[in-house]
Length: 153
Image (tube, rainbow, N blue to C red; front, side):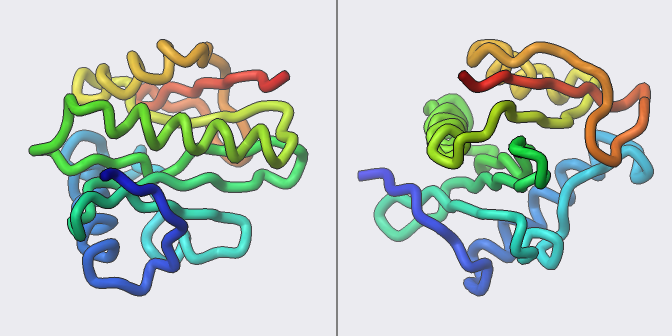
């Protein structure tokens, strides 16, 4: 049975997965265009992190950053490469969407890459109704980034 649970980021498994996520982002994007949060950035009070487990194995993670204006930002969505295609990203995204609605956010935002490596991520977000938008929060225009938003009713 797959479980999604809050993660305090103290376990070695999640530390390794966050490092893999960082490496994956740096391999696909120029460093100046990588906007992933390192593990210390994920430990901030404004960020909630969840991990996805099955039979004691860490499968993936996702995070929600409170932007402080009634909106949130999806961060650190990652599924282990060998497990992609099982719908795990969808499960995590649905969990984050439910939490954003529980918090009464008016919108959810995200930044992801514009390169081909990020097509699966963009398709996932598009399937859930995210539309492309301009930079939000502290982001600036970047040819290697795309920004997306989902108004929450």
